[in-house]
Image (cartoon, rainbow, N blue to C red; front, top):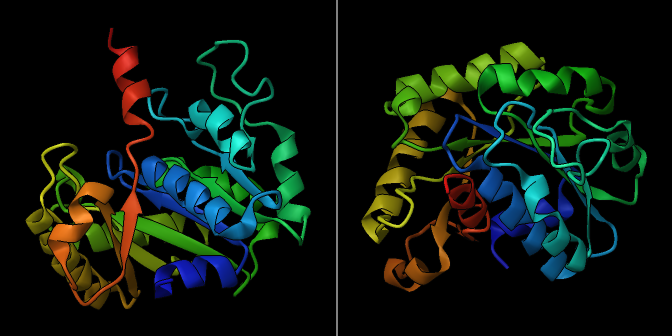
Length: 236
């Protein structure tokens, strides 16, 4: 087990995930929930969909697969059953936040505006009792320089009143991602880390590309393509 997964399993149990639109934060959040379940957290693990901005990539759409893996999914009051695009959050989301025996992944909205929803749960996030991960993708227009990425991180902190505890590199180009893309993304995220003083924990990489990376000298988190199919379905 690498250092990143060790921290996810043994660090503060509340793990919030945020990032720029298109950074891959929802894909990461869903992949992390599956990985935690596979590592033995099934049955005491939850994923909360707090993204009320993006109707296309919503972690709640993988609810059935997550539940089968032992991940309890919290989202809108109807748990997506009514087919509505109305973006609301169920009051039941407070349950895993209040349960000291439950590790919970929170998929927050993109950018500082999307992360604003965290404010209504501020009483659950005290200093040192949460992890707030910011996904960094150098291939997005709003975060394509370390300076822009650092500004984005600070905007999230200002809006939420919470401290971003770590950066996660996810320099994907969807199916055009290469091992070189991953390496370049890690270098970029390291520069962002230097500007912000926030550590970079790992780089995301599709399973099929992991062998091509060899031993890169940093932690790799294999990320799935769980959300891609549902997004393409909506374009038909």
